[in-house]
Amino acid sequence: MKGVSALLNYIWAGLILLSLICAAVTGRMPQLSAAVMTGSAGAVELVIAMLGMMCAWTGLMKIADEGGITQILSKLLDPLMRRLFPTCKKGSPASKAICMNITANLLGLGNAATPMGIAAMKEMAKLNPTQTADNSMVMFVVINSASIQLIPTVMGTLRAKYGSPSPFDILPAVWLTSICALIVGVITAKLLEGRKSG
Picture (cartoon, helix red, strand yellow):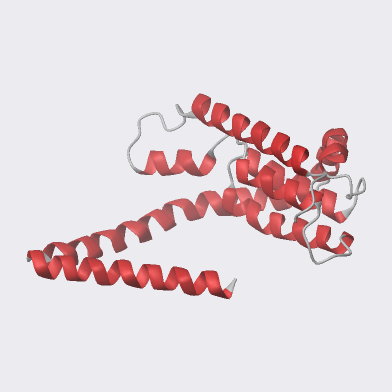
């Protein structure tokens, strides 16, 4: 993980250095300075615009957890969960965290789903006697990567922030692409479950 972080730091540093060199060579330093200031201000405005939505949905997910809605979701998703995650027992902390993560993803709350996804992986790691990811952990990563969304909340907020008159008109495309990605991912993971690395 530290190697990946260091590599990303080098990439970002290289991009910044390259942009400075190009701006100096082409005589566009004033434009570069203006772009840095505009981009910084835009980033702060975007964070503030998204902060309220993220806080509201994260709070609602916490209320749902405390109010027992996750237990109801666990029961509804139990037949599917047993097939996809055979190592997770019904009502276990891992099963509960997976349900919360999937629910947050369905609502398009990628950032709010992350803590629940980490919690689910930790719980599944407790059930795994080896240091290698088991089939359930791999399947969970595949489902998260597909990120099927019924309501792309974050994307809708971004589109509204940047002036889209109908920010949720992307729904059919989001549903189609995420469902296709999920089907292909799950089938591929299931087909490769029995194979051992050489």
